[in-house]
Image (cartoon, rainbow, N blue to C red; front, top):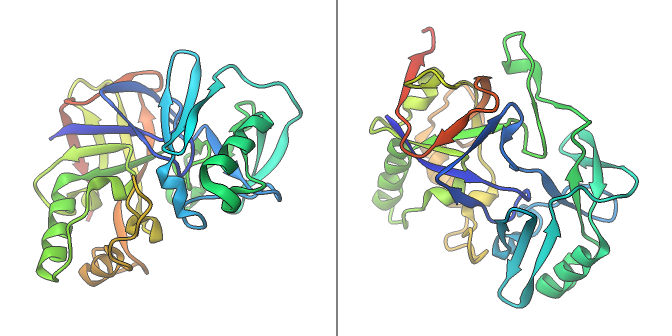
Amino acid sequence: MKIVELNVYPVKSLQGIPLEQTRLHAHGLAWDRRWMLVDDRQRFVTQRQLPALATIGVALTDDHLVLSHPDVEPLSVPLAEPEGNLRLVSVWGDHCKALPEGPEVTHWLEAALGEQARGMSLVRFATEFTRAVEDDFLDGGAAHTYFSDGYPFLLTTTGSLDALNDALTAGGHAPVPMSRFRPNVVIECDTPWAEDRWATLSDSTGTFQFTLRKPCQRCKITTIDQQTASVPEPGEPLKTLLALNTQPALKGAHFGQNATLTSGDGAIIRVGAALEASERDA
């Protein structure tokens, strides 16, 4: 097995950036979910509420986070931390400390997306604050993350996508690309759903190791085209995932595994890296 994709999502629910290599941290890949959009009540905003967020491109330079959209000029946000008072923002059930970016971001969002973006602002995770991962699946350990939904890493496999697309095609539906699932690490593996049986995943040189913690329950974002924000087939691929029932003991549709970093904080992870898995106890 080997890594065939690495993706980082600097701003939660905006477009991702494919990478050839990046640095691993306990909280996730470098710059992953460091920023988040919030409404005027400081609650997180995602494609669940505003699918048009999928049309905003994201890039990183040495000095800036760059946002782009077909209808406006790109906006550069300095990577240097902004000055200002910390805000308390909410993501799911967690309250996190964050630094607000300038009002020019709000103006840019409104110009790009129109009235539906009114009142939204961009905040940056305050790194002196720690957001703990739920401890239900950590086997007594501890982990933390930034503005991800709940875990620092999401791992998926090509074999599972192939199996899902075979089922979609058999049902008369169009196949979907891996981007619908917004993974951090995509692993080339021919066996469908193999990741659901893995306990750990390590690179062959022992530089880093992930522990796979919990199947990832999927939501309506998987129905949204991650470039255009269109919904080509309402309900798909969720309906087909539900029918496949890959997690009989759990409710909902699942695809991929949430993971934490067991070892290798600060290491470089690369596309092409060979991987070895250990199986869960039966």
